Image (cartoon, rainbow, N blue to C red; front, side):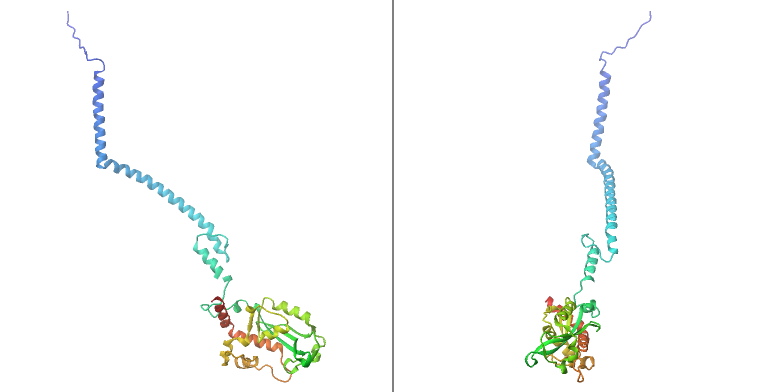
Length: 305
């Protein structure tokens, strides 16, 4: 009979498995130990941070691109407004360019003469000559011995010297002295003259809102029974620089005849026919134009101070 050999393991069925588990645990522990070592040395963190930095960089790039798109779209929405001469001032974009146009637009529409302004465009006269008129009136005497002055002729000329208004006017009271030597008025001139009330309405309609130039202009306004705003009056008998130019005392009122002769080299109020209100109004405007820029600048600086 042959022998049969049996290998019997009495350690139980889980003995090999527990050995495998122990060896696995040992490998895992070794792995963890190595990982901690690497983390401690900074090798593992370095690699992870590098990946994270790429991710963070991508996010930043995306945000920057989005911002650029938004800025570009906003720029397209704002800048077309500057192609117009007068941008919409009701909007408030942060662009300094709009404030410049607003100013331009602000520095073009509202210009006040100042000391720093150039002579070519410093005066409102040059910007709006249509606003300026020259006035001259001729008076006759009424009442006892003709002591009361009343309007008998009124002339108004434009900045360029064109006649806007020129009429003989019938005084309210009976005329007792024509004063022809000075007024140039004759009886025939008053025969079909415009009644005072009617003429007054026509004249005031022209003067309202205008800058009125005159020589001793208060005398003219007095016979018109009208008070014009003081800041809209330019009296050539009270402009010191006119006297300066003529070589006359600054504080002493000079006659229209004298100033015209010296500064314009023209003769007015000559002969026996008396004065012409048209001629006087034209001379007054011409005189004012010789000092308009400088005088308007002086008035502006005195008002602002």
